[in-house]
Length: 248
Image 1 (cartoon, rainbow, N blue to C red):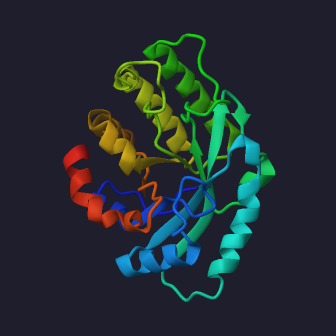
Image 2: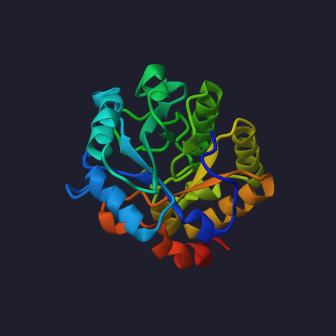
C-alpha cells in the first residue's frame, strides 16, 4: 500500500523517513531506542517514520515480536509523527523468504530487500556475470511482487553487496531502461513503492539518477529512507540538497 501521496519533490519526500533501524537490529547503535527515534523525528519536524529492523533467516519472524516491544515502548508518547513499525524483510532467492506470511501480515510496513548478497544464505545466480546478476535480481523482485507481501523495495537494484567484480557498478550498468521501467510499472500497478535510499544513492549516483528519472516517467511512488543506524541520520531533510544534486 502507498503510505503517502506521490511526489517527485525531494523536499516533500524528505518529510518522511521510512527506513530506520532500532537497537533490535544488530547493525544499529544502542542509542537507537524507539522513544529516542520518535523524539528525534518530532524535533526534526518529520511527518512520518517507519522502524524497519532486519529479519534474517536465523531469526525467523523475530520482528513480529519486536513490533509489540517497540509499540509498548512508545505507547504513552504524545506525538504528531505518524509511526509505522514494520521490518526490512528478506527475499533471499527466487520465491524464498526469511519469514512466513503471518509475520508479514502482522507488520505495519513491509520493506523488502532482495540484494543482501553478502549474507551466506543468499542465493546467487548460476551465471555470475553482471547480466546474470541483473536477471537473477529481477526474478527475485518479480517473485516478491507476485507474492503480495511487499509495500516497498529497499535499496532496489543496488549491487554494492556483490563482491564478484572489481567494480560493483558493472551490475547496475547492465540493467536496461526497459528492465527498470517494466518491473517498476508492474510494482506500481500493485501499489508497491520504490525506495530512495540515501547510502545507495551515495555509492552509485549515476545509476540512481537513471532509476529516479525512469520511475518518474513510469509514474511510480517513491519512499524516502536514510537506512538510519544512528540518531543523527533520522532526519532526511539534512540530506535533501545532496540528493537533489545526485538525482536531478
